[in-house]
Length: 82
View 1 (cartoon, rainbow, N blue to C red):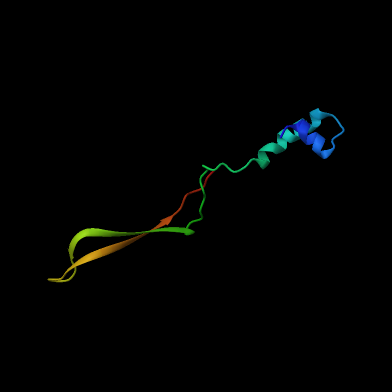
View 2 (cartoon, rainbow, N blue to C red):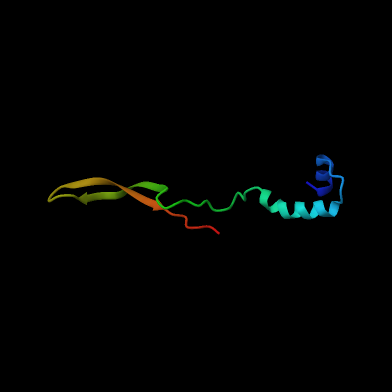
């Protein structure tokens, strides 16, 4: 929104230069969040769990073979953004 429109809406009757400077200072604080910015997680806050199949028989114990599924848990830490 332009500072002149903003001045009309709030009933500003003083000089526009002061209002424009103040709006220029405050505008970055009210910008919407960038949708492609990284999300930051604390350590241990998020875990990714994957299930996968090895694709063949696996020796388990002497003379035993099995089709095994494996589960892999990965603790995600996105680091610190900034």
